[in-house]
Picture 1: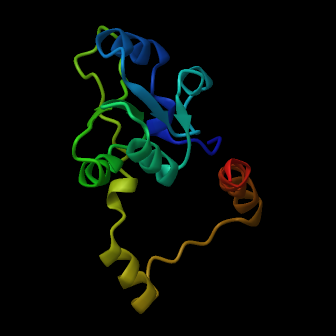
Picture 2: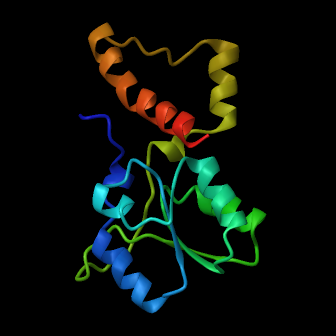
Length: 149
């Protein structure tokens, strides 16, 4: 495991290029964990908050969004006059254009967090060497956010 996200790794540059031919006025909003070829096509590369802010601030009425689909509800709440299109994760011959759904992210809920904080269950012990490796993507994201400020 190289510290990457299964959803972001699946976004396809060619799929975004194809969508841009159908929707030429769209902005492309991309999470930085996406493949380099996808990041290169982006109008905005950023964290969840930065993607939400860009959706609100950019003049485009349609946006292709390359990150977990969990963001779409919030985008539609905050910017109801814009259309958000999930970036493709499948090839052109696939029957599924995109699901952009991380099954592990979907398991997170405030109730689960509260239960862990109140009852102390679900503690995970990580080998220190693995923990050090796991910090690399977190540090990259924090460094990226700091550089964008």
